[in-house]
Length: 362
Image: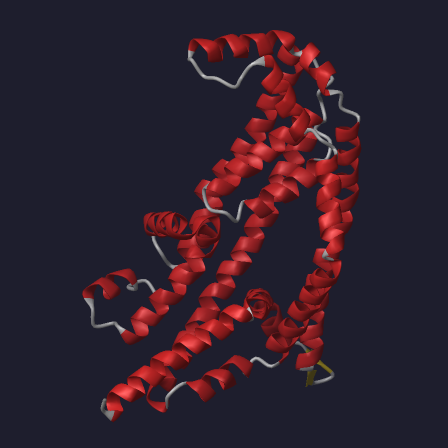
């Protein structure tokens, strides 16, 4: 075996070892990835604070970074303070529900559903099955188990939170830290191209993640206000959940709408089905439909097309492919990953016609 083959084998083994090490410390990698996203979202604020002069002096970078970090912590803290009392209230509602009474109150539609399922020869939709399923899903211990699981992992959650905040602070404060890392690991002949990729990625993804934050806020506001007008309790909780879940392309609104209708129904089981509950459900669906139309025709074109400079149909196929390969996680990561690959392709493979076509707007 010649020396060249030995070098290839050692290089392959080293690469495998690096990937194995990254797998072992994947939690740290996740912390770093979340910190990069937060730093990209805070980057415009850092640039704005950098232009402010106080008695002719610039605000120190550490002070600007601390301001951005405290803003992020404040938003998270406000979210937690808002959602915990509402979750407690939902738990108390669940604990007061009498499943047998509900089955009796809605006996007529349940019988109609059972007969309809029998005509379609679908098994497992008899009265007993419906009652047992309802008892399972309306079990108040579900929320208690969830809270217990969170509390049992509170130490890990705090460590993760503090780690993310610590890394984010230094990514904001020392803007050249990523550049220094890249300078260390990149060969000199590729250094200029890699820095162009990094700068372009920062600009595009910063706009993208800020757009996502705006999207979440607008969807949460539309749903919260709409459900408040309709008269649904815990409208803020449903709106926040709908906004956050909406980051899942295409599936997010469906999941959010399902959760919203479920919470609305559970909170109003005392209403008469045909004259009160069904109209209420239709109103809730109308609110989510309004949010969905706004998202599809206003927010997504602005965020996906304008921020990452890609055609909506192109983005649709990218998300579809990512979803088939990696499920919901792939759908969430599809756009930023695709954006990064386009930037790399334009810088290093611009001679290929397919790359030129995909990156002509960058």
